[in-house]
Length: 189
Image 1 (tube, rainbow, N blue to C red):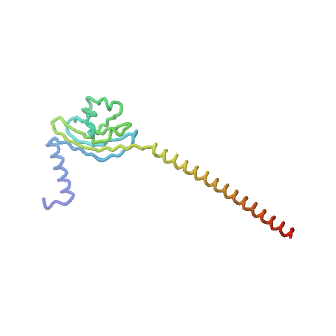
Image 2 (cartoon, rainbow, N blue to C red):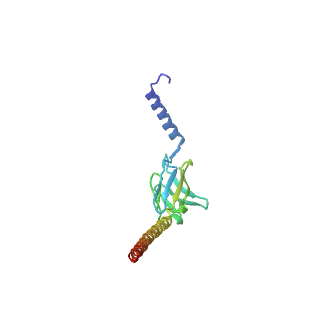
Image 3 (cartoon, helix red, strand yellow):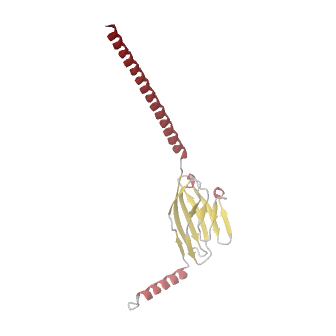
C-alpha cells in the first residue's frame, strides 16, 4: 500500500469507509448549525441531514429549564405524530429537519433529534435555540422621554429669550429716564 499514489490511496480509503458503513448498517447524522438565534414571532429552521440504509424513525424533543417535551416523531413515508403544543407550528422535511413557525421565548432550549433505523442503530444530534424578545416598549419610553426633554428645553429657551427682551426694555426705559432727568437738571440750572 506504500507504493499507491495519493489519489489511489484516497479512493481506497473512501471505498473502505463506504464498505464499512454498509457492512455495519450505520447512521450518519450531521447538524450544520448547532447554535441558532431567533427573534420572537419568526420562523426557525432546525436543520439536520442523515444517511442510513434502512427506513429511519426520526424523533425531535425539546428540553428547557421548565420542561421536556416530545415535539414530533415520524417514520419516513409511514406516519407522523405531532404533540399538541406544536400542532400547526411544525413543518417536516425529508432530510429530518423541522421548521418551527412563530417561535416565542418559551421555545428557547435544547432540541434533540434522534434517528433510529430498522436495525436498532441510533444517532442523536443537538441544537440549541435562543429566542430573543425585542422590547419595543422600552424604545417607545426612551423616545417619548427624549421628546418631552426636547419640548421642555424649547420652552425654557423661549422663556429665557423673553426674559432677556424684558430686561433689555426695562434697561432702555431706565436709561431714557436718566437722560430725561439729566436734561431737566441742565435746563433748570
